[in-house]
Image (cartoon, rainbow over the protein chains, first blue to last red):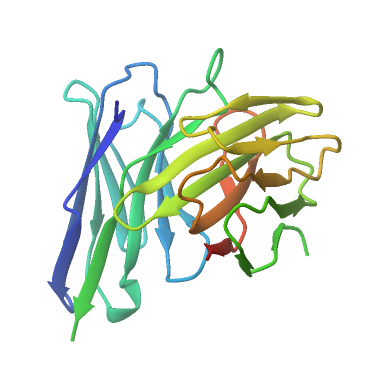
Length: 115
Length: 112
């Protein structure tokens, strides 16, 4: 049972374009939603995270949009650059109580930004 | 520098041998995790530990074992019972609550 579904599996965007990656979750107890960026041969690193009390969070060119009623959240990368080419993972976690230490990940999106 | 250190970066083993992957953190984090990463599969949780001397099975614990004798260390043993052990293994740690999980650089295990 996959609790966090991520799409698309791969994405090709032209330099300067907008990259959009979507995630949907099932467990309504989730209350922390991070996005991780991973370069080949490296461990993932936190990019940006959101909690469900806000609908949007922006950090530089990266924005998370969150729709609690639809149980969906997405990552938008504005003005995409070749250096953004990486695999992106969404994740979800419960903040307290049983399972509060677990992070559940989507299957990842491989982003390629072409010049 | 604070962080998570996984060693070795590359590991080769013969089929049927047990192998132990090292994970050490100096971030004073309570929780530690082991994930397995296969192409197209994302990160799948093998084991996690919330506190010393306690650990819980994740989604794919069969064929793996762990220990948590010290707060800073969480080694993973891939046993001969693991049917398809070749993969990229990632260790992570996290403070309690809604906080960032920090990952190590991974160990690529190849079983021949």
